[in-house]
Image (cartoon, rainbow, N blue to C red):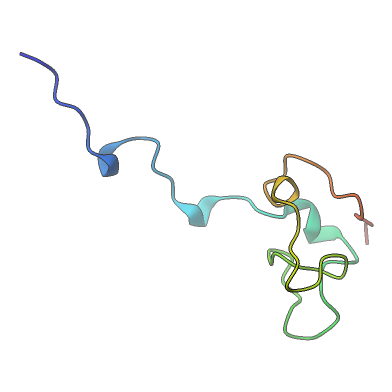
Length: 73
């Protein structure tokens, strides 16, 4: 008998996005917030160097590349 294929929700490749590590290097960067009290979370897609509506490069967000503007606190 042929093996039954898994459905998408049974597959191990499905991920819990809440467990993804994003913008890890931004946690210690002095440029992490946009200069107002509402945008001080380092996990946001924008910062002082990438003000909204711009956003950080995808490779920086995923931690695969270091940000060109990173300045440690």
